Image (cartoon, rainbow, N blue to C red):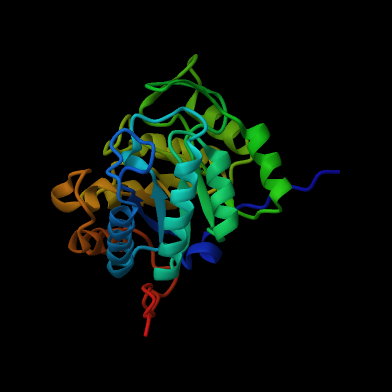
Length: 289
């Protein structure tokens, strides 16, 4: 007999049932086309952004090699894995927030390996099931390999999977409800992420409602386009949010995180959900003597 998979308890991971997860976009890493030659500069920027997110009150952070575009569609270079491992370990020594990892475009195996080794809590997988046509070519989900790899590692890292991910089109015409159900029931995702068509583009409330209904008790996250103007509407049909662009200076994706914009977003998001947990009184930034 196989055991049923219990839904992820977001409160256990994030200390709140409605987590706000801020994104640290790493500057270009070694072997990427725009690599600048200084890992020290990459680390310093990442530390500044993680600190700004923690100080602004987010409940978790996720680290991405966002500026490595154009991305490989599957396995990244070992230098990228090494650099991300080093940087994420530094960030986890700096802030006490739960940390996630997304190795773009779809290197879930490397993300899981890094997360397991540094004791991060979750990874984001752009394509866990199905086949998507992307600017990197056709990307096939590898839930079969990934879930077996997680078991082989003895890892409890959670897998948050995009459904019909942004910057991509599915082969065929899958129904959103079916896509959500298959990602959870056949791909064994611990949570699902719904985005708009591109970075900075939000999902519709209608799509979020469909996804939440299909997901049952599995958490549904807003994956792009959230801002303090729309978050109160979008959170009516979601459990949490992953946010990036609207936290940057002037809302520009290439700019660093703006702590004031983080605080504004967090305040708006907190108002949009019923208070189920008391806010944490302790700081999320570690103080070193």
